[in-house]
Amino acid sequence: MIDRFVHGNHIVGQSQTGTGKTAAFVIPLINAIDFRSNKLQAIVMAPTRELVVQTEEEFYKLARGSPGFKTAAAYGG
Image 1 (cartoon, rainbow, N blue to C red):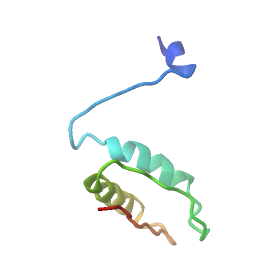
Image 2 (image 1 turned 90 degrees about the horizontal axis):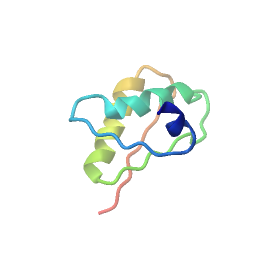
Image 3 (image 1 turned 90 degrees about the vertical axis):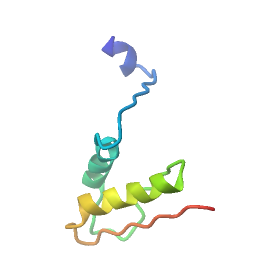
């Protein structure tokens, strides 16, 4: 069954609030960022304003000790 997922198939998962879904992609992204660089290194898109704000807050909490870390939330309305 794992082999089927490795070869280009999609996986959809759901879980309750507070289970770490945002952290599951924020932590690897933070690990890939070069904090010495001033260049834009990541853009995260979310479908709602609330999720944009939540994601930015999670980034800030998890990377706040990193020198040079900057984040900005942009959303329409």
